[in-house]
Length: 231
Image (cartoon, rainbow, N blue to C red; front, side, top):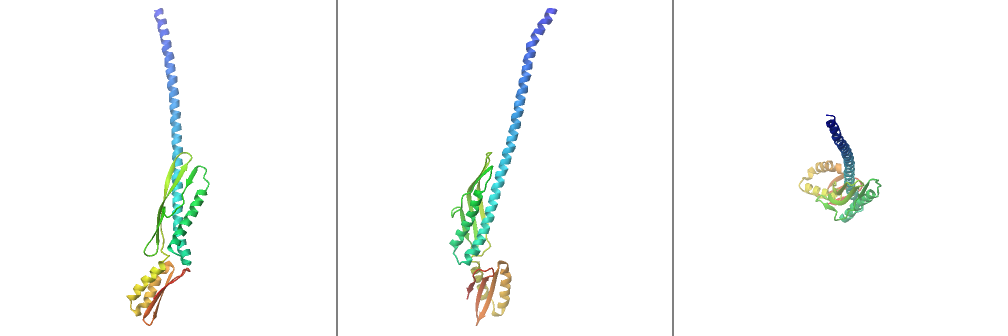
């Protein structure tokens, strides 16, 4: 019996050692796996935050440019209209106005983000003239937004509609002359009042003058632009 007991003890020692090594190895693997998962989780959070920054910046720049585009149309309507310019002058004014803002965006310093917005031209920004003299502008800029951590975004969509101004006075004058042609001379004063009420919000003043049965229509921009006279 003593001999048998000694054999069992000798046999169990290697088994215990192997088991101990196995436990240590499993613990090490578990620790490494946990650390790897934790690092991966932190990395995912960082990348998501970086992606959010990229998306927010792209959205902000797009909003700024569309607001600038709308302002440029309004400014071109007044400035070019006051100088008696052409449609081409208006279109050039709009693109130059927008490009000036794009240059400011590209020049802005950002520590973690690289923003590149190309200047617009007649291919990337289309300007459409509507029948009433207003403008619809649409375009796409191949812009890029790249974060130092990797996330990227591309492209900006431009779109804006203007309140009609350039050539709007002519359109109102021609429309008023049509209404005058269908009205009786006795209704002239009431028609003038109605027209002025209708276009007052646009800063336009309509004057109807009867000279020996011939009614002339004059539409003026009360903000200072030129008037249009239609006999």
